[in-house]
Figure 1: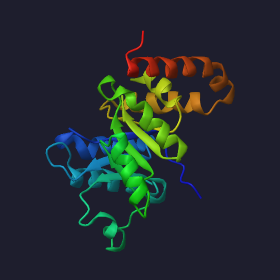
Figure 2: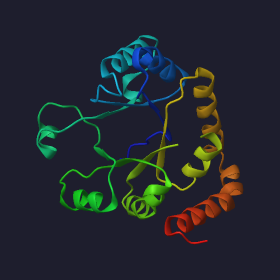
Figure 3: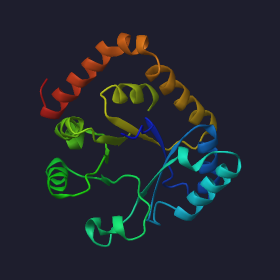
Length: 207
């Protein structure tokens, strides 16, 4: 059975000494997906864990949380059998040829690709198509009305790193109201289609 991955995940990068508090706050506000990494320059995994632990003590269930941790595997997929508990695998900062190679050769296929969403990568038009055909979730970084348009492309998850508790709640509320309402989604379909066409034009330099 496919995992139902949330549309928004909370990013813990650059939170420094506030990491634990902000992570706990994000989870208690309703974020069920947390992004961290074994990269001390930008992340503090220990404090992220402390924040998650504090939220669990407040009644949040571990089984309801997705935790993304970026690590260097010792030998490709061997870590799957080396004692790590991994629900699913993903990659980050991959270009289309790289993800094609990985997908063609990996025994365990990645289910998430985490990339930036910007013009320099042509908004990953080709990569998004590749992922959509294989039910691979594309995870991108980028603000609230824009969130809705990006999510409307389908197969995308957004990295949200706000430090404002009210904004945390508002982001989750707005996305939930839009994507939990079939009538509203039908009304927005024209906008989603126009946005998709605009990205295609921008990616090719067409006017």
